[in-house]
Length: 66
Image 1 (tube, rainbow, N blue to C red):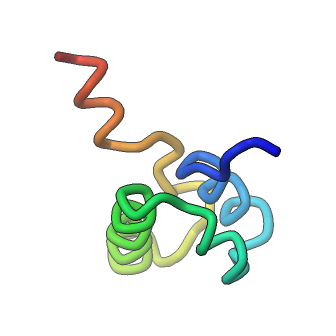
Image 2: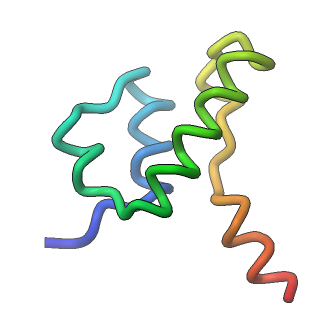
């Protein structure tokens, strides 16, 4: 079984608009914190539109640049 990651959670939110608690538990702490922060920003500034949810982790983008 593959590990559930940030990108999987975002894809699920975009498709269904929801994420189960079981899936939440499978995320690493780092991915969970980042996802919750992204959801807060998404709800506040994007009015909860699924297509505006960031598809890629911001932390991973920073690592790629370095």
